[in-house]
Length: 110
Image (cartoon, rainbow, N blue to C red; front, top):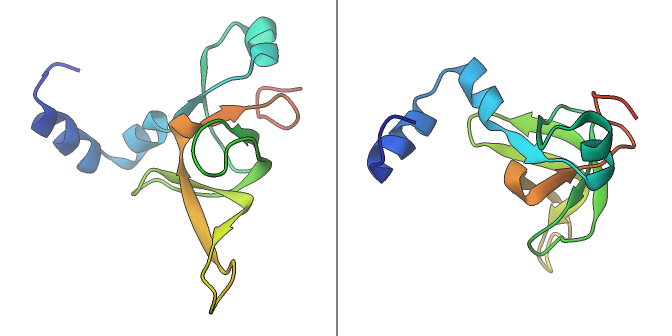
């Protein structure tokens, strides 16, 4: 990052090209994966097993179903929100920094 101005940082994230946005979606790895591969952060792909570390859904483990690169959200199976009228119908997007890659099913290997 060349600039320290917050507006320029936001502009860089919004107007980034597709291959750069993909590289921005990284999440920290679990301790087991770190001991094995010596990598702190990992680019998340569809099908990876992740654990949610922070937020309302903390502690849940699931598989990444889809990734929305334009909004920077990942959709994990079993995570949805709803209301009394339509319970649990809408998928809830989660940021990549809230997740932690687990060694069960990652593209780096188990």
